[in-house]
Amino acid sequence: MMQPGAGGVAPSAISQQYGQQPYMMMAPPPPPTAQAPPMWAPQSQVAPPPGQLVQQQPQPASADEVRTLWIGDLQYWMEETYLYNILVHTGELVSVKVIRNKQTTQSEGYGFIEFSSRAAAERVLQSYNGTPMPNGAQNFRLNWASAGEKRSDDTPDYTIFVGDLASDVTDYMLQETFRARFPSCKGAKVVIDRLTGRTKGYGFVKFGDESEQLRAMTEMNGVLCSTRPMRIGPAANKNAGGSQQYSKGSYQNSQGSKNESDPNNTTIFVGNLDGNVTDDHLRQVFSQYGDLVHVKIPAGKRCGFVQFQDR
DNA sequence: TATGAGCGT
View 1 (cartoon, rainbow, N blue to C red):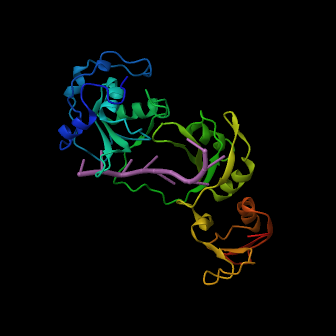
View 2 (cartoon, rainbow, N blue to C red):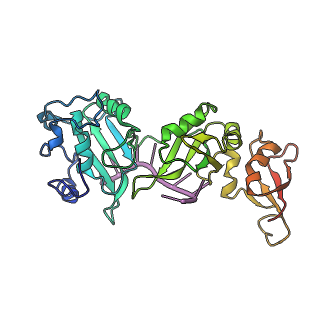
View 3 (spheres, rainbow, N blue to C red):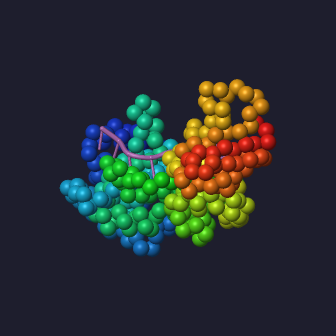
């Protein structure tokens, strides 16, 4: 399959040639791969006559016919020609586009793939998502393109950090490992190195319930995922819900932010807590940072104090 | 490897 820089046309040249067109790669010369599906093609995919792709015309966009997929975790060399070549055999590809940094023109690591119908897009999403990409060390990361629609996240995420992941652990594997015990587990992401396409050995797991997040932090630490025991920690502050924003500044020196100079103070103040957070929650969350002396949420308060043995 | 990042002209 395509090597970086291989093929008759350099991807950058294609960008320049089609950059102003609404649909790039719409009528390219049929590449060799259009003749016969490669070995990695799912059995369900049957390649139609190569000429058919050229006839595809994009239908008018309508709200109930989303035909575009978002693709992420792309390595830098995975440009339009690459994406085109690995998906053209579906026979229903309309356009591909890799998003680039305006200044550097380097790929931002994601792009959009438009199909002739929603059904075609769905087939590709179902059959390819999570499967290995040809010539890449990573798996396809696909989703419906949903730009414009707010990423409707009115429900908060409760995220944990998971380290020590074996090199074969996928998003799916990680999520299933947790979902088996925590039904509110709603996603997992293994972090991929953009240069190599390989896992960085850590990831994040999201929960809908804070109580399950907290339980998972203790109950899943050391549990096997694939071949290695996971090491679990709190996720640093992004989009964290409720009291988990503690790492973004909701905690402070217990004497207040105006007076953080007491070298003997070992107590931090935790604010903005949910009403149902208990002393035990705080203990679970903070015990990994050091030995705790005392944890207290005063009755009826939405804040608490966590005292460590040392600073 | 040890705290990412995912929506465009």
